[in-house]
Amino acid sequence: MGCVDGKICSALATALSSTLETLAFAEIDPLDVEAYKKDPNDNDITLRDESIWAQIPFVLPFKGYLTILLVPDLANNLTEGIYGFLEKDMLSEEVVFDSIAEISNILAGQFCTNYLGDDIFFELGLPDKGRTIDESEIPVHDGVEYKLDYSVEGFQLTVILVTDAFA
Amino acid sequence: MEKTVLIVDDSATARMLIKRCLEIAGWSDATILEAANGIEAIAILHEEEIDLLLTDLNMPRLDGIGLLKAIRAKDIVKNLPVVVITSTGNAAKEEALRKAGASAILSKPISPAIIVETLEAIFGE
Image 1: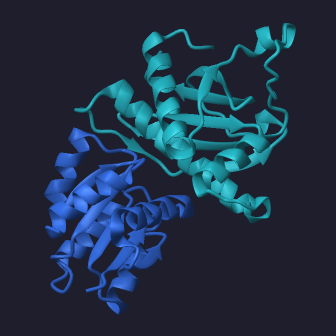
Image 2: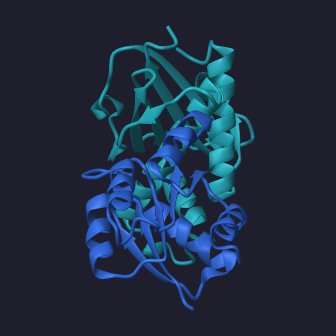
């Protein structure tokens, strides 16, 4: 399911925009992947094939998961932006995984703040992360799934929200 | 006098971002120690004299609330300023953390400006 719920879509887009802009000075644009595949425009966008992913559980007041999947080059670029690395060879996979997990952590927190407001107590779990060429290898969970795609610096970034809270 | 700061977060990226904010905020002379969870932090607190502790909440082994409670229960460090830096901060969480003894609560991502403001409020500098 795409973003059919305006409140979720808005809370997520605002959270993603502020998280990436603050941490890595990166801007986001919504991306319609199917439309782009049919009619690629002049703005070349690298779609995901292999992905770096991070997943964080929602613990309270609802159960669910937020997963982000990125083109590995984008994960490297965001990590460089966060750390301010000048040398590419300073980027170990461990550092990239850790920075993407921290992005998912902050993104999930900002999403909950935007969606729930200031007066509802919420808790997140610990993030999991990895690299895959097969999306089905990423742990899946029961619930309604919202899948949103964005273009970030010319690369595809996907956010998947799974929870029963929004059903 | 040069201060010693303990940063506690299971993410090396988060620790680096906090360290950078401290440097920009004028704390570049401080000695920075790091721990990846509350258990490691308590071990450091037994060995070192710490002036300020900045901690995440969500961590494996011993989380930030557990660490905060352990600190407030120990006579030697019970007055240690503890700043909680969390991705789950809002008004509801802030009230609970204040009751548990947090000196200040900041939401991730933090900025040097908010660190300056917070440390000025704590140390009056």
